[in-house]
Length: 391
Ligand SMILES: *Cc1c(COP(=O)(O)O)cnc(C)c1O
Image 1 (tube, helix red, strand yellow):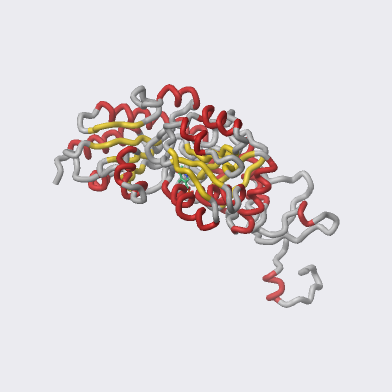
Image 2 (cartoon, protein in one colour):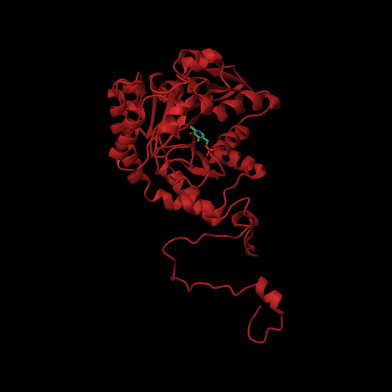
């Protein structure tokens, strides 16, 4: 097409523009974004050994999957269009009607709602246990029916720590799979545990800049194959532009994570010493009830600090948030800017009141995701909002 002497019309030309190819050995330093929904197959190769259609895969997506598999020390990885898509795709890939799953009250609200309200429609039952009572897991296992135990650590929003070794031991005794949502801990932690599948919301630390929604599942080839079969039919693939942004974000992953953690520690210590803060939950503080378990399982304690204000500070956590100037009230976490969310309206409205209270969710609790700003500015903002008299 469009060689000299080509007689095709201008509309044909515009729809088949010149292809610019590189000489062998002339390579771009960064892999280009393959912004193409379809690929023309090589006649000599079977279709399944090539890229054919963007919903199935794309080189930009595949590069990200390989990077994330290696980072998490797993054989393979599937990248999908959200963290919740990773969790629901994983569950649908592993269970079928008649199966039972074990998970915990201390779960990210949409995950809890999917297991509790959606899975039963497809004949999949569940037990929603208390993550701090390991002994209950064993008696909840239904032989021949329980397929997996799914947990988070630290949990969203209140940073409970799962006893991972304990959970794995029970699961292995009964031939049950272990799946973990490690979003709060990031991609580099817990990789040495014998966890069958590691899920992440890449929206958080993976991408790290708050401009992409994405998720991933990493694990053994044979399990990833099962999950990929479902996610392709759910149409949950991630757009190549978004894949590129995450790939780019990962270059500074460790630099960012380190600063997130040091800022979060300083803020947790500041809040703990403040007379108008009732309680602070941060796995890196001695006062965290599972501090020693956290130290055994994690090298870095993360960017999220949960705390409760004294009712004399503000009538509600929402009102407190609106008093902050630099720190904005927003959902999500793990991006460069510090944000805060009142815990009750964001994470607890589906729970009965007594359970909310047990999980540390009430009118005066907050979840702070610490970013990369100068920590003195963040502390000044918090300090100002805590000292102001209620209106
Ligand atoms: C945010 C989050 C998710 C969901 O991820 P999305 O990318 O928002 O769909 C799942 N689990 C945890 C622990 C999260 O914090």
